[in-house]
Image 1 (tube, rainbow, N blue to C red):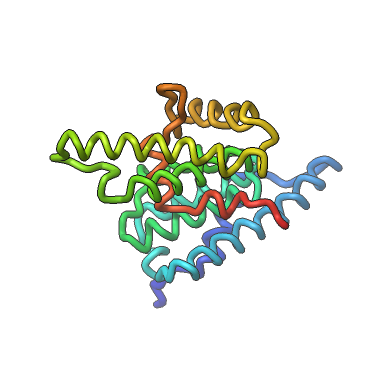
Image 2: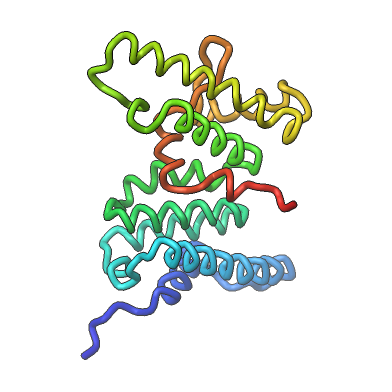
Length: 224
């Protein structure tokens, strides 16, 4: 008797059936079903692509006890209208968590709702802010402990430079005015990805965690 788990594509299809349910009987239902079939293909393509890039062992993923819960949450985001770029960063987060052997339903839930509903502008700005902070502050000093007063002062100065560099980089190239960019940053405050202090926006720890799991700015980059 073959006890091996079914192919990953079957997992995705079953999760789709679970979150959608029912059979369309009206014109609207048929249109929705057609849309959902296309959306489910996006779900599969983005997940497969992320797993290949992350060199994730599909066999190990399919047998992970939390994978069904994570997959249903991922597919449900598509059902609720998440854009393809949102599915891309969600699948990237799944792949990177699996690659690092830290995949869990609780951890993924912490990020999934944020990733599924971010707009393109929010995603792009969040990604660039996190990137600049790491470039200016560095990974070692980001959450440094046992820092001297001088180390702490240098870290705060570099953090301020990163916040200012965001405006220099994105205005007017991506946003017409500083107020336009500030508006997106305030939205990120509402998502818990930024905080506002001393007339500047700074990334929160959860944004830095997200940045390590998915390339937000790349996923949101406008086609040239």
